[in-house]
Image 1 (cartoon, rainbow, N blue to C red):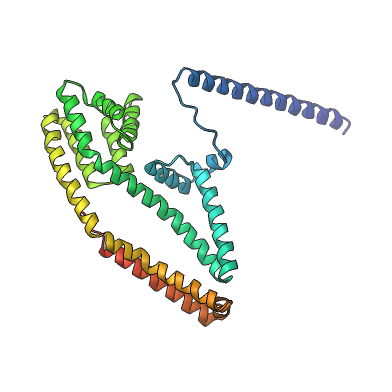
Image 2 (cartoon, rainbow, N blue to C red):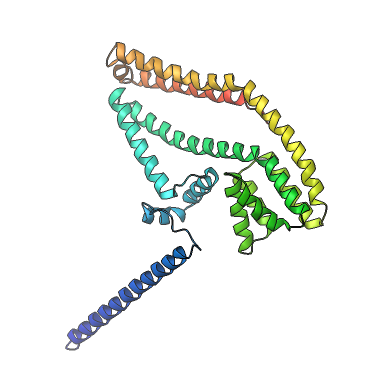
Length: 311
């Protein structure tokens, strides 16, 4: 009992010393890291890039499965946004839509607008990914032509990919630059190309990747394979353009149908102020609204399914 006070004092001093040593190690390590980043940035070996927001949230989000899926989608879209920034922007947009719908229409439409905001955010990523994939597909004939010319000149396939990354514009140049960087750090050609095909899924890219991998493994005639593939990709490109033109009216109808429904609902509420609030004040009215919105969603999905043609 008499030794308790000195023991407590000794443990407290030891904890203070360890805390000071830990703080010193943390600050010195952080200073060394910043000095290394500044040195590499000044020599042009790395690009420091813009200062990111919500870095703590971004680090925690990347450790989760949801964060990894968001990161994969953002990488496929090519957007300069981190998963943490995307999550904060989505939550802010959902909150804004919730408040606007609840104040303009009725409180019942607040949660529905929030769900619509989450769906819209995911749809935006899918649309941007599809748009980038389409742009990449349109450049595939040029990619095959550049790789064939470089291979015919005696360059290896790895060097040809790096040269094509420098010559081609985005998104093909950016994606091939990622493949070239992965090859530069020791990844195999099969893994790098398979990851490219998973990032931008399309039949044309799968054919190109399979051609390059098989030619690299078997040591076949890469030049002749790429020449034939270039002609095929050009023909598929023209076919896709014709089909897209023929289906443009159907796609516009798919978006016009739900827009007309929402516009009619706003028109009724403007003619008879408070009509939506009174209608959704009962269980029957809420059920009818949900069924109506469900029918509009079914119509939208049905029209999109009918107009979807795989080429």
